Length: 307
Image 1 (tube, rainbow, N blue to C red):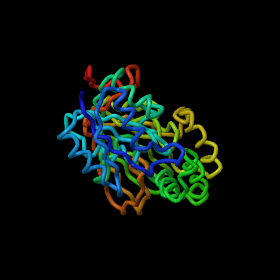
Image 2: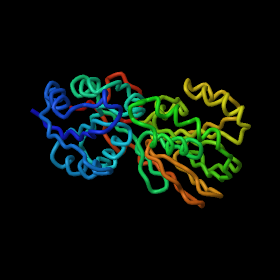
Image 3: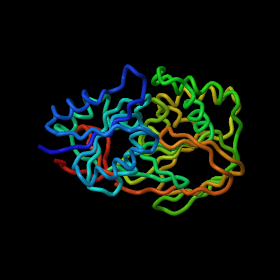
């Protein structure tokens, strides 16, 4: 029987959606995998646990939300171990973008799925695997951190109200790089979303065409708008129809540099912080981590038959 490490965040997501270690272990054994249970006790511990687990196991499973998955990816990037995602967080945007609705689907992919080589990205020195949001999106992530987890996926919509009332345009200069060279965009911006996957913020489709295995990142830039115009535009981001608005810039890129005139809020897979004014680099690490996904999931990148 093959073995797997199961890295479990015991406080991820709403209480009713959490997965007990014994239940998670039973799911893995049902898929023919013998688990080693590793329960996290502090923030960022999952990265070290994953790096060490990759030396012992062909499979590394993670039970948690986008933040925990992101920590595990940092530890697995560049190793031969395959990631199995058991989504139990508030948003689970990365998992849902791969067609993994719940922990049962995540474990089922071991037996019936395929292995996809997923891109990993780095912005301002911090790694992310699903999305990185700036300006208004970063402010919402900061506010969501203070909303009780019992609200589940509603944490992000609830957290939007305060930042939306306070938000102001931010001056920035973007230098975007793709296969054809570099392009510069300079102006005042309300929101920027860098998507490796299509979903963010508990279900928004700000980069609806992003493919985590295509060796590129999708960028959504929303310029300075009047507040009432922004309020009308944002709900379209739930369905992804905002991309048809001529005021919204959508680009597919390989790398970028952004220079902010003032400090800016940001999030990396939902983990929020603030960036100082000045220049910050975005770079892509193509096919950086192997992920087990359903056989018919989104993802056109270099994959494999798996185990």
